[in-house]
Length: 226
View (spheres, helix red, strand yellow):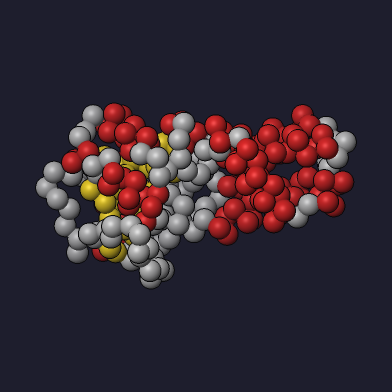
């Protein structure tokens, strides 16, 4: 059983691959979006696959770094460009992103998540932080967190520490009173630690720790260890 430092009164959690598997959710959402587009923009879907659209979106993010943290805006901008390129109505891009988002919210928390968060909720202020677009109030974890933040709201994506700065501000706590738990050594552990938070690495799949990052002091494989 992991014991927290006595100073802790706030716990922030990453979402994707920390509280639920990410890629299968995104894959399903993108498959549904492609089917939706096929009935409205056939020339686009005949020219592109899910993989090629991802590559196109990555290139767009490199060209437009000021919006790279806002993944749905990036997707909408991409679709507007491609719809226009293939002589489709670019105005359906926003509707397409809304449709995608419905499926992005269909997450399936790991079995240990709800029991652990329900226990912690009674004693700690819980905050969700994510680079992704999942809307926590539209997931099975609705009502568990006291606060939720994403990269769009903050204006920066992890590993930029701005999201942890906002956690400090919104909870009225000092960094020493906050523990962050996440799966990513850089975006979660190193980023939160750089702002002075306590950190815990949730390593569900026995991944190796990167050689170029100072190792997390605490590692767990399941939230049931808390």
